[in-house]
Length: 621
Image 1 (cartoon, rainbow, N blue to C red):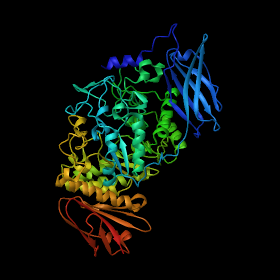
Image 2: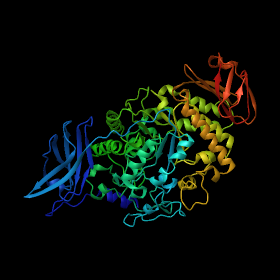
Image 3: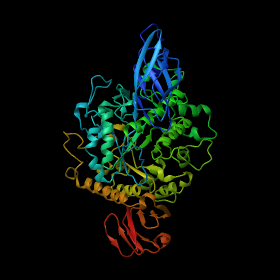
Image 4: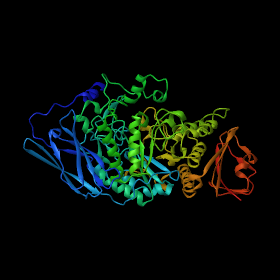
């Protein structure tokens, strides 16, 4: 299998002989008048498209340069679009040997619909896999003309039929839960065949094997369904995060079927996988060969690795990113496998997006286990030779610290000390509040299983997630106690949301369909998320934490108006917590309201903390 995919990547198409020249694709598929950057590079494809001499006669649109590459089926046209240009159909005219080819390319007016609003610490992000969340349109479950025509909910590795229409039906559920933003794993077309992984045939339902960046997968509803979903989400007061993939594409990506040039991909004499080791990237003593394998090795055999140092590849990816924000109106940008990308390219891409959309938030996935390596991929205060301009990132290190706090016994350096110590190193980041925090995701064990199906620990972890610094995100189903481990397969943590399909026996989108324990968890998340949404002190308030003692950990979120105290007992025994030690933050307050129970405490000099409990107290005069 490795060899066949590598051959696909290595073989350039045969040179075109005498044939009819045609154009079958132009990417970007359209552009807009009035973008801050007036330049755009068109990828033009078709038999012999690179052998044509091009011209454009459209007021305000100038063809600056036409470039050819190894494959004569490609031309790259550099255009400049003046602010005075009018929306309309631009005719791309190509001539060769008396033959004239004309291809219409659309120039649009920008609209005033909300877009690129960003996500901030005021938000609470809900991560869902669209194929596994809800099926609102059974007519798009499968298509005979796609390489994977299967849909079978009984098979954990096949597509299950979830789509954008189904997700749209549950926007009210998300808003009621206290969610303010929804992030889907990629919606882009994955016209991939089933792949043999570990002896099982698996579909690319996860969405990370792109085959055409300009099309949302038909099985999710297509481009128009995505536009409609984003508009519905915005009308409901929710923001939308798009999952971007720059590092690789699916092996059946249309460009790979007719590769423009060998350097479009990272090529190796024999198949070479990435080592998945991040240390060689930041290690000042790293061997260049180790670094090259980390960055240029393929993620898996069926996800060929793009060469972002190739200027045509870089332009293609950057323009698609801008096109996606403008076309669909998304608000934030999560970047897959961030650390495997060429980092100067990432800086260029981030800068291009932020130049057009200053409020857009960008946060990438770099799964490392220490704050120094994590800081490398975001704006930081460390003297690295390379300086990242990424505004945010996914805070895996804090996740590991919170899990250790819940799973490890109380000790001098373990348990809740791990949570405290991770936050204590926030000085490495220019703005740690823009990191996206989490307790699990689609690639990890589900949170409830990580904490031994212990509802008390579950509540304590969710309390931390929703009250500490950063932008909290929660994996779908956590609120109804979905659980499982990814061993033996990822499918175990990617099960369908009960009630998302018309024939489901249980509907956990409703209180009536949930068990008493599930409703207890749902109500807990809703109450805390709703409180968080309405209290700015948990968005922009400062954070002060105190050294944990005997498993007791206290921190405060505070501003000039409000103070919230979070006191946690991570031990398995009830404890009394004298508060005189925290007078820097409790001074001037004599009472408190328990946010989760509504109880008023008229004396806060000593707090009674049951075992495995975190209390959230709004301090009162």
